[in-house]
Length: 288
Image 1 (tube, rainbow, N blue to C red):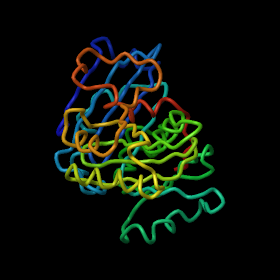
Image 2: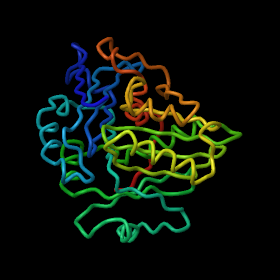
Image 3: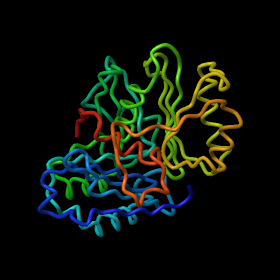
């Protein structure tokens, strides 16, 4: 899957009906997606747009983000709840015993070049750690302007919580989520998180390298340990075919809970939307 624009709105969805709906939004350096659900998890709006020139930081795609926010009319609707998740590569896990909430920039001294960021943290009690992430202030202000009462988090938080639920209780499991030209990988051992990493890639061989590196770090045999994939990766794509040459068992991530996708989304498989639907599956404890 190279470039995508998908836009669905229930014809009956309006400001009058949105008051009982939940809105979930992903603002990423590679693209944008949103999900609005009403009673019985019925989908009222489902959208995705790739950015033609994805970047590592939000400053690389600020114009594209502003274009999306400025053109999205349903952002002006009232909602019962709003969850806005950032996705970029500037995120790291910190054990709870080493976490200092008053000095979040210190965790990025060796990871980021000096620049102006706002720093956030998501508590992950099931892993006894915090996810720390850095976001450009312009994007933070934009999200707070449009969604003043929203829960803010990093996309990895919802993914990790759902991946743990899917991880087996008796052996290892590797997970991969792809968004345009960025990917996230995690390794679990009996539902214990061992590794989370995010990286950009241009070619299928780059994606394969980082996935196999995760296997190698924990001496896992890709012919024995399964890989669960989600996101923008089709079974007939070069990315998938190359992975399948080296990993014997690849499973597609099912959507959390019962979901009936719109008929117009038939050409996009369920695993394409996995990370977006993860946002509404578990409560997030986030610090602004």
